[in-house]
Each structure stands twice: as structure tokens, then as C-alpha cells.
Image (cartoon, rainbow, N blue to C red):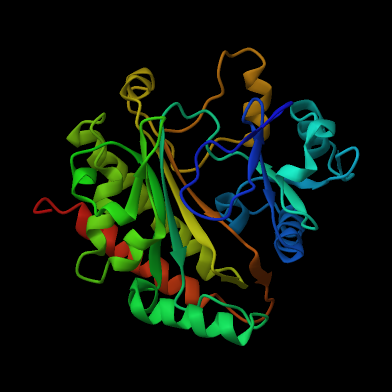
Length: 334
């Protein structure tokens, strides 16, 4: 991508058209008005909150606003000066090429969840047994019901949608139709891999994700344990949230550069570092900081706040299955 923008470098699943600024601090995603509204609703709910409990926004990318494309692209005005400053300071919005993104779609400006990673391995896990909302066409409902019935979406409430990982011994056993080798040394595993998994072997998909040739066995075990703790914390958050997140995903990321593990002395954090604090720190650092791994909720094109309707059982089902899978993975016999 020309100018101050480039196509997003790493993506495990989802649609094309995503891009970042030159410094890869921000993530621009063509989306729906419903996703914009969901981010705005969640952001408004927690602006004045003083509670120390982990809320939903702790698991979501920081939402910075929306981008309008035209002769001169611009960020819409925001009442939050910190948000507006982050956008204007780190993105030259006049240089976006409108023909490179889908027309007639709002573009959200988000924190780039891969910012600060040197060699990120990423996994996209779609949550829920029900994969469509009430606005879907009948044809789409039938198609997505079939996908759910024939995959682990229906049996477990989750499905591996894709991953982008480094070459590994386990990756060499993949069927040709489920992956492609990239020029940057990564392997992109497509949606067909996850659709072939079942309740008996879905754990193999997660083992594949963590099977990095660059990391020691102890570090891979530590990652499994850390992600299990995060998923349990997320589960507690979701029990207190009154939302419906149809077809949302969990994005798992970990650092596969062993030198960075050495530099941080294997010290990871359960939650991502503060986006705005990290920006201010970067002014005196050569590269942005990032944890050694992270867990985030993404993709809210079919999500909404549902006050008074209780927690999202559709999503909770998938998170419970994920807890069971990670709990089994950490057992010595596995």
C-alpha cells in the first residue's frame, strides 16, 4: 500500500481490506455500522466507571474512532482528546487510497493488537453454536446452520477459523488443501483445517498453534498455562456482561522470537499493556513494548448490547469448552 499505509501484514482469518499505518500502531478495518455502534456503546459504558473488575473493554482492542474516505480521508471528531490525539499523531489520514478498500463501508480505527511483536503467531477461534443473527437472509441462515452442525461450532461452541504460524514439525503433516506457505516464512492455515476437526481431535489444532520450533518446551507449557488463566478471567467477565456477540472471535497471539523471551526474562502479563501509556513510552524507545502473548475478543459486526437479558449463553458455551481444552493440554500426560 502506498503512502503512509500498508496492507495488514498478519491475519489469521476474516475478510481482506484491513490495513495499518506505516508504524503499524493502528489497525484500520472496513466494517458494518453495527460494529461501530457496538464499540461506541461499550466505550460509553465504561468511560466513567471506577470499578476494578475486568469489564468487556479490557478484552477488546482499543477503539479510536472511525475513518471517512473521500478526496481527503479524515477521522471523525471525538470528544476524547486522548483518542483524537492518538489518531492524528500516528496516521496521516489524507493518504488513504479509497480504491484499496471496499466502498460504502465505515472503517474503524483500532489498536493494532500485533504492535510490538517481532514474530507473532496468531490464532482465530470463532465462538458460539449460532453463527448468524436475525438480520441474515434465509439462505445465509441455512448455510451457517449447516456449518455449525458439521463442525465443532455445533458440538463445542467454538471453531478454529485460521492461524498464521511459523514452520514446525507438526505443520509438515497438514493436508495440502488446508494451508499455504508464505514468502515471509509463515504458514497460513485456512478455515478448512478447523472445519475438519471434531470433538476428539480439536485439541490437536491448539497443540499445532503452540508447537513452535523457536520456543523451548517449558516456554510452550508456560504459554498454555497463561492462556488458560486468561480464558478463566474472560469467562468471569462474560458472566457479568449483557451483550450478544454473534460470530465474534478470540484472537490468540504469542511471541515466537526466543531472543525477546530472553530479553523479558520470560515475564509475561495476563492483560495487554495500556495503549495510550505505551504510546507515550515509545517516544524514548526504539520499538514499542508488547507482552509475550495476549488474548483478545474481536469481530463485532453482529454484536449488540442487550441490557436486562443476562449473559450471552452462546458465547459462554464456547469459552467453557476452551477452558476444558486448555485444562487438558496442560496435563503431564499430554
